[in-house]
Image (cartoon, rainbow, N blue to C red; front, side, top):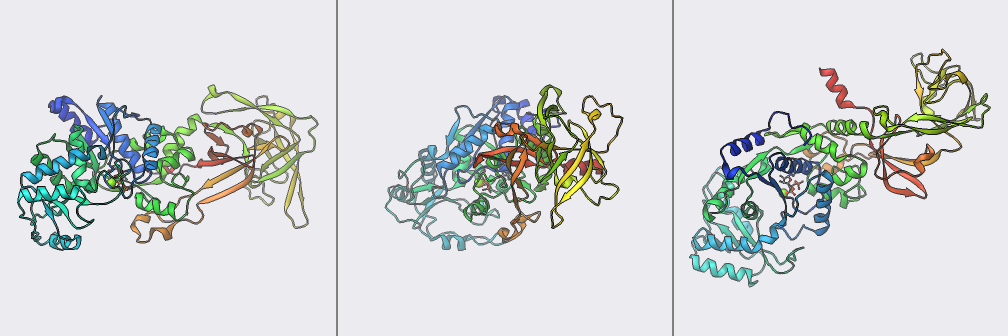
Amino acid sequence: MEDSKKTLNFIEEIIEEDIRNGKHGGRVHTRFPPEPNGYLHIGHAKAICLNFGLAVKYKGKANLRFDDTNPVTEDTEYVEAIKTDIRWLGFDWEDREYYASDYFERLYQFALQLIDTGKAYVDDSSSEEIAAMKKGPTEPGIESPYRNRSADENHQLFLRMRAGEFPEGSKVLRAKIDMTSPNMHLRDPLLYRILYKEHHRTGNKWCIYPMYDFAHGQCDSIEGITHSICTLEFENHKPLYNWFIRELGIFPSQQYEFARLNLSYTVMSKRKLLKIVNEGLVEGWDDPRMPTIAAFRRKGYTPASIRNFASLVGVAKRDNVIDLSLLEHSVREDLNKIALRMMVVKDPLPVTLTDYKLNGELVEIENNPEDESQGTRPVTFSRNLLIEREDFMEDAPSNFFRLKPGGMVRLKGAYIILCNEVVKDAHGRILELKCSHIPESRSGNDHSGIKVKSTIHWVDAGTSIDVELKLYDRLFRVEDPNGEDDFMQFINPESLEIVKYARAEAALQKPDPGKHYQFVRLGYFKLDHGFRDGVPVFNRTVTLKDGWAKSKHKSN
Ligand code: ATP
Ligand code: MG
């Protein structure tokens, strides 16, 4: 979407070759097939951008298909969340919202077809026995004693499995392929198991459920998917999918594998994310520390920044780990253009301008220095101000250019001030700075002739308001928590810092929930779920410092 002039990735090369050869009449049809057993994460975002992006680029179609073959872990909450996230990312499946469960009857007929042609059989062995007979990849497996049942007997047994005549785990349906194959997936894989579980869509209609491997490829064929794109771990399953296509004589969807997206300082498996949620280490799936799309949205990432990240990462054939800072870089690039600048003081230190005689005045401050068209806003300035405590230093080294005793600094959009006196309490804590201002130095009309090295932000003490800031750090302390057995022990205990009473320009009393803000020097922020006791609560989307751009600059 963002960058069509880039060189083609390997999947685009295949597609363009197929179009040139008139394969499937030049038709391009992809799908995104989530299992509704958790919220979508940034890895899924990558797969969504790829599948829907290809459809857009080649004027094809992309389906949304819920791979809901496992009634145990799936839920409609997840179905709704997944749809919200894909729409938010900017993609549209039009009327093509499909469910593997919609195809249960057809999959069942496919199974009967295999049974009737002698290509599938009902096995009464236990799951332990089946696993033992499969053996390992270095030695041939053993055929099940039930393998040579007649087609008729298998047909009858399978009907009875469906009718609920057998207990769970007592029988399975297996494909009859090759117990000696070096590819373990071809050693008579399971096609159906008995499960007396209610399904979130089909209710209690079924007590046999297809295995993922039997459902996935056939669903692609039913939908006429031309390019079935999945992650590398399914490469070994492809011979099985192709076997089904051949034996059933169905539409030959072709599978292509690309490398999963992995991000540093993050886990990405839904099972692990669910554990973090269930153990209460975060507020929920959309806690801004999570790598989910819902969390990124709440935190203030934009859809464009995620799409752009997906395009920067590209489509790889080998597994790799992408630096979290690349994602943050992409977010900053977008926010820098659109965010409204505001002044917020995180740790306020009072400043009194002893020589300021006016009753206050309005100064005009630019809304976005990157974009003049965003204009300016009036901000109240007065004798009593608040500055950032860290912007003052009493015993400052010579390279400290912010405020120090006897030193001068510019207040953004206003005047140059001079620090004359430091007021402390009995314990030596600084309570207040007494300063004077240079009336001729007003921003926009400065004829003071004075040059200062630094500009600092401030708010007016009288009109500013309280805001709460939630500042996030990485969820994990180590770069690759996935490599660790017990990933939970590497959770960063300091991943959330709450600043309960920062002080902000009065305009933030009515923040726009849809808007992205840059609080000068503190980072980009977005309103969280709203207010706490009348105080607006903001999530820090990302800090201003761009580690990625810097390191790129260095290496150039
Ligand atoms: P998880 O391991 O997180 O549970 P999954 O592969 O089981 O992921 P699915 O719901 O089956 O989750 O995934 C839907 C689609 O998203 C699949 O086509 C899968 O290949 C793709 N996908 C999942 N994780 C990633 C990832 N990290 N990078 C790229 N694509 C991914
Ligand atoms: Mg999966």
